[in-house]
Amino acid sequence: MGDELRRLRDEAAGEVRDLEASLRALFAASRDSNADDEHDPEGSTIAYERAQLTAVLAAARRRVTDLDDALSRIAAGAYGVCERCGKAIPGERLEARPFARTCMGCA
Image (cartoon, rainbow, N blue to C red; front, top):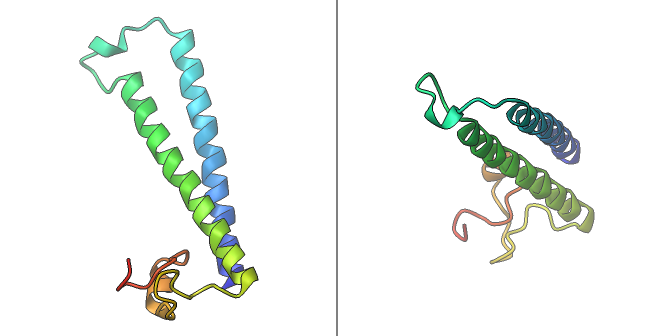
């Protein structure tokens, strides 16, 4: 499971890098433009795109953190054990959510 978690973590970290680059590019584009995007009937505003991209970036960062925590639990021998009740987290849950910290009953 550790290899799979590392692979997922690497993918999530790559997504974070890509999203950060996209956000920097969006900021640069908005600085370089004097367009009145708030009143543009043709599409979404730069502010909307920035807010949406920022939310996706925050979720990707949380995923990296969750995967780092799961890798730490593997190293400590606590992976797959519910942090609330101490029972084993079923394999199906860990397959669906490899960074799960609790069993379904405690979630």
